[in-house]
Length: 132
Image (cartoon, rainbow, N blue to C red; front, side, top):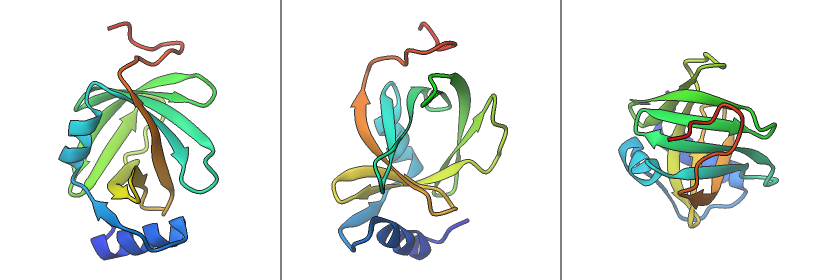
């Protein structure tokens, strides 16, 4: 598990500059996410990663850039929000949520940083997405 100091340092390095950042709790992240659909892009390069609809605090639907959907079970482990997807059973798919330079961002233990670029209440549109 990442220490807070390491996470903040890594986020600064990944983003290329030391600007205002604040780690937020998984509960605060889920408060913002529940009932919403987030679009994620890589922090550096801005490449589209995918879109996630947070159906409940413990269930989401992830749509990849190919348009394929999968359900994800959401858990909280310390300061991290973790996802276990039906088609990607990696129990270490966890993220530290941050407010960073005015953006909502998440950072994986690997140092990968993604930025939330769009928040809507629209459901995901892809094969296998829920209808309610």
